[in-house]
Image (cartoon, rainbow, N blue to C red):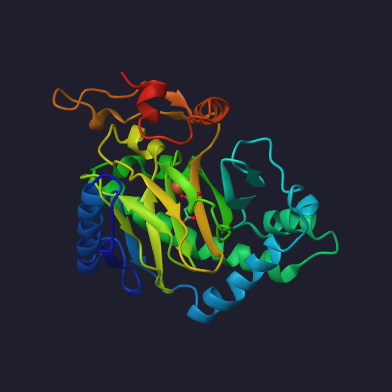
Length: 315
Ligand SMILES: O=C(O)CCC(=O)C(=O)O
Ligand SMILES: [Fe+2]
């Protein structure tokens, strides 16, 4: 156990049926698979064919490679005053890791504005690629969130949660370790946000199970890894628990991944609905402002580690 890594995979749930509509048999079946997978693993793999495979495998990763090939002085122009929203990299503790963020890239004008900071002459191919990826994957994010809200009997809060979330697209690159360098790409952590949907072009992502084993998430072109974050844990009063995960580099090629993160708007008070709290389920976390939580965690470097939500607002 402990740090051993196993190669069995996460549950795979099929979201590719066009008849997947609330109230149908198909919907209820997928919903219960989602509930089961989240209870057991805190994450799962979703088969979702909204993005044609060749577009995802070729055009999207080509655009991502082109982005990382820009000079460092250009990449650092991808700046945001919000923690973890702009360029990250060159950290001595994580030498293999580099990433850039595109807030609300599902909105064409936002994708274009952020693209033009990196390519002042414009790069419509890139902005279109990140925009259409964000739109398609946000559909999956909303399907999953709707299913979780329904499973918990919180339908009446669906609009509230949908309307208080925004999206951040992050693209990640992990270099191959140099001889003698450690192969850690990203240290073990739980995401802070509501939900994360990841696509990887190469193996590297590992998930820690409840028993402490690490499992390798096998790459498959048409599947996305769906994970919940600590904000969702707080909002559901601990019902939905996120999984610790990390990236370990193996092989001789750089690894790229793309993640769509949904986050609560800064200023939104994260508070479990009253239906989540009773005698058997006392309130676990003090209500908090998501923007303050994010700032606290980054300024105190508490973004990595396993007991962070409890540290910040546990009761
Ligand atoms: O690159 C990956 O697969 C994981 C990235 C990740 O965990 C994160 O950005 O929070
Ligand atoms: Fe993560």
